[in-house]
Image (cartoon, rainbow, N blue to C red; front, side, top):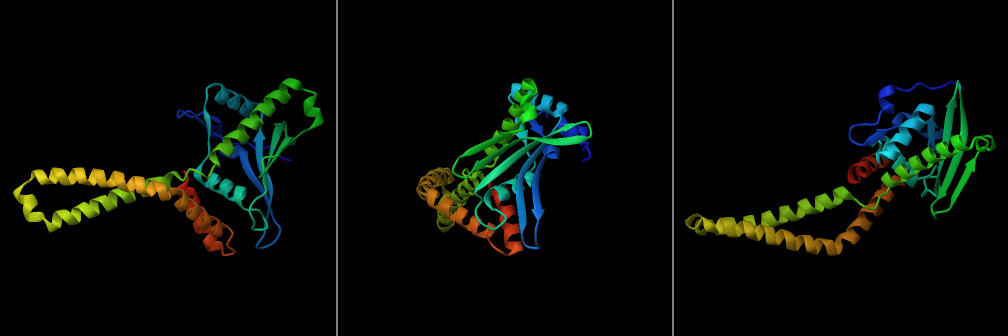
Length: 248
């Protein structure tokens, strides 16, 4: 097996307190038919230099920076398996480059119910310091990925709802201003009253929507899952884009 050489810029810790390792993270999958792809797991390919980069990032409190395309694919495979069903678990495997060869040294399988199975090659255990350093990088990468794979926040949905509240408040008060425009023109101070009304109405709508936010979130996730489980490629593609946009 040939040793892969990756671009140096991908190895550097960024000025934004993030470490980008996209070139070393790969979704291992195998196409077994035109409509089925078998997921083997998520692969980390590390070497001595990358271990040092990760060690430095951990010490300085940096986080893993994952590009949006890779994060979208990771979110998809973490939800849907090769049988087009909800995923039951994820496997993470760390390969180490030594010379011209790559060896699989560590593997962790995390099931949906929280069970974790760890595997380490026996010859790796014969070098305690190296094993400890590799395990530290392996588990840090898993923790960073799982943190960013969380799907409960729906940050942009909250933003959309906030914009909706402002829009409705402006629309309602704007209609009132238009209906009583002569009075507002005769008394410009009434525009200030209208502005206060917009703020108060927006706050009231925000509180009202918060009551229904859990229901809205469940409905959105239900629609997303139906799209991901769809047998139509275009429907899946659109849903994956929505997933990437809703949860940055």
